[in-house]
Image 1 (cartoon, rainbow, N blue to C red):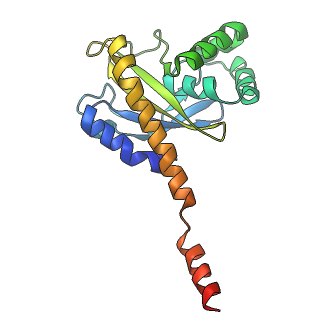
Image 2 (image 1 turned 45 degrees about the vertical axis):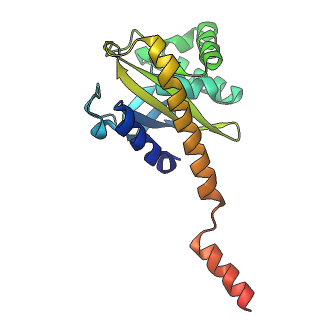
Image 3 (image 1 turned 180 degrees about the vertical axis):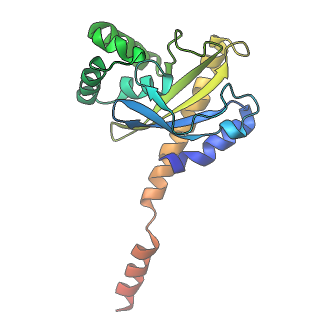
Length: 192
């Protein structure tokens, strides 16, 4: 999935300048597996590749946790409730955590906890869902002094959503294409 979304993420950053990150679940956090930070002239960060991010404090993690299946969400919240990390503390207040995640689902995207550093930037993130499973989350990070929230919600959330949809479509097209070995076997069967 990360490879399928790579060309769209790079094109997004070339056109809009803001960096895109793609993260996957890694136990009780998400880890950034691809980032366009090196291609962004306005990135708030120097690098995030392989960075582990909280499921409750960071936008990429919140997008995963809010949109994953209920049974998986419950299991992850149980794990987070035992964590010693400050950003996971909300998991000990299950009702508040579930209200937050329901709000994220309702608005259709996640944002970083405003109390988490750096406060000079923010991230919006959306899940990439296939067969009711969150495969990855895709996020755009920006300086809060450069964009106001209404601009981000009105302009960039739909663009990041289109990026996520393009990644799913590319993955499905790649999955539908027969591999070279499959094509070779078909040719051999027809020749016999």
